[in-house]
Length: 402
Image 1 (cartoon, helix red, strand yellow):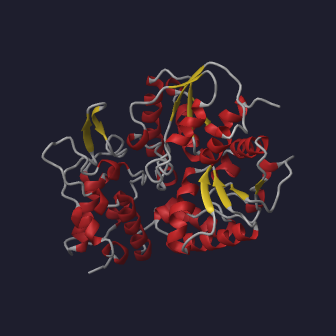
Image 2 (tube, rainbow, N blue to C red; image 1 turned 90 degrees about the vertical axis):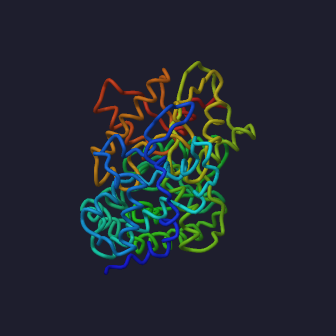
Image 3 (cartoon, rainbow, N blue to C red; image 1 turned 180 degrees about the vertical axis):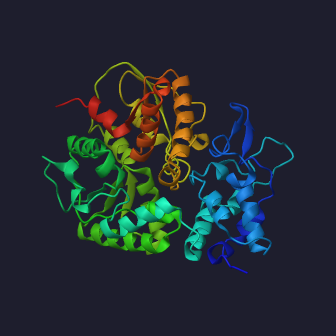
């Protein structure tokens, strides 16, 4: 019998599931019945596509009733690791259910452990994942780009190699959304904050962790720690929600206690606005906000982006019905956009439809990866197209020049 050693270490989590099924479809007074897992309405919807079914399959393997297979692996990679399942686990509308057990089940951790075992067994990751991870080993990014091109976004800007605050640019920003990197750098500069950057920075390792290549993730993490230490940084700032979660939550598990503070750029900018170091111009505009899963559910950063948006005079924030811990994933995470691109876009279309329902003219987010997938879906579906913009870019446009 094949043993899944990483899953076996978490077997108590799998055994804690009582099969209620809120992780598939739940009822909430504000929403009615709704699909919690983004896979429910965008796949055939069979049990293994969402958390309860995945956990039942994992139990089957732990109990020796089934063997890992390519089919098992495929459904395990049909997951954006968004954490929506954990957010509702046993938070049920049924009055008789009063014993929350979600503290015993970290669904995302369990599913990522399965993927790590699948990689060790040669059943994972998915073919496209293997291509991008091989590239990340050579060029330190998953976008099939040359590492030497990473800082083209910085043209015309005087960069510092050492400072108290280090800007970790990640991969999506420099290679796919360079304007967002420029905007983060420029807004910080306008507030008098000098950001250090380094051409030696590598991918944070999020994609490797999410799809199960822990060895590569550890290599990337150890290299980046050396980069941070060389920069003498006291604070690491990221604008990508995936990088933020990886450095803040995963790096301590790999590297031990970190000798610096880790902030998302919205946390830094919220401090600067509240300290009066950024003044914003007035102008009436209705916007809505998408909570990135890595930033919101996984790290509980909900209010800082909203405070930033609310600090702009004349701006009205209208929430989507699904927001904060109940927000729908953009569809791209967990390796889904690379392995199953049409699935990622299908989920993004649903999120765009929710944004349009608010009547907002602008959809803001705080993650370039979310922005990219939502923008891709809008470009392919003009009827759903809503302008999507990063909060940092929105603030830069609103800066009152002194």
